[in-house]
Image 1 (tube, helix red, strand yellow):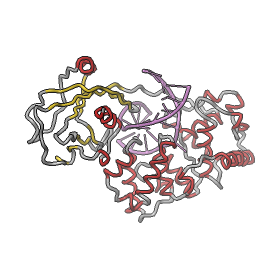
Image 2 (cartoon, rainbow, N blue to C red):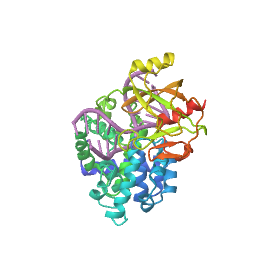
Image 3 (cartoon, rainbow, N blue to C red):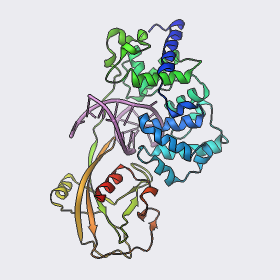
Image 4 (cartoon, rainbow, N blue to C red):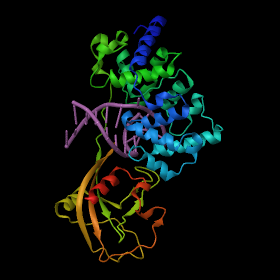
Length: 367
DNA sequence: TAGACGTGGTA
DNA sequence: TTACCAAGTCT
């Protein structure tokens, strides 16, 4: 593209006029309040907007401002986030709210480096908030902007490498509208999701095609350049469903770090692929997870019954879970509900945060 | 810098 | 069913 001042001005006029006509109506586009924009941007990371919308509405109702979020109950916050994935986002949201209370006197920071200092806020989100809420000319570089920009300039930099970011940043800084930087960013995002899409480039309806190198050369689908993702690793587990006489299930809390941190789970034990195969073919199980040492629990769980199996796919792991129902020799009562901070009998499913594998297990056990 | 970190949708 | 995609960040 010829980057003359006149062309850049025309580029923005075309892009922003298209945006004014075609922008997606989204709840968080009805305001520029930094708190609202922040929450919507965090929720939208690697997540489609259709999925985000109900979560956003519930979140704003329960935590309408920074002060409320800063003192949120951890379990309630995680429960609200249940099903959205990437649960550290919820944890970081509360930490960042506390940062704003202590380091910025409760006022959402308006300086880029201050916004960037918030937990869970990286270069994309900081630029999105800075441009949309504070009118700063910062390109918010997400997957959409990288795809559109790579086609505009036929950039062959691998977008899956973090080092490529600065190349896209350099190009976009020359283009970004000083008057409407927030709309510039959102226009390119909408363009990327509706017109300049990964598998199909609808160049015939693109408002900026006359500036596009890939369009001129008929090569839009050659961009962006991106290395392939690794395949998920297969992992095998046996999960145990143990019920007391009240019908409550025994659950454990996962560690505070790592995959599904702080979420509740049925006791799990790692299996080899062969051991897993044994269970699903003839119900034979060689090793069960350790069960709690309870005073009221019968001394031996003499029998286990194979219930079924399912798989759950994460971005980097594929879990194969066989479900065994533990059958105590006699019925037993439990004196206490909460055994400790990380062991409990489930009384109210709606009160504790459960991730995908556990939700699926409940579905199967209900049948 | 590469890999960890969830989930749901599409082809 | 596999592969990839969707408004990334942290370590």
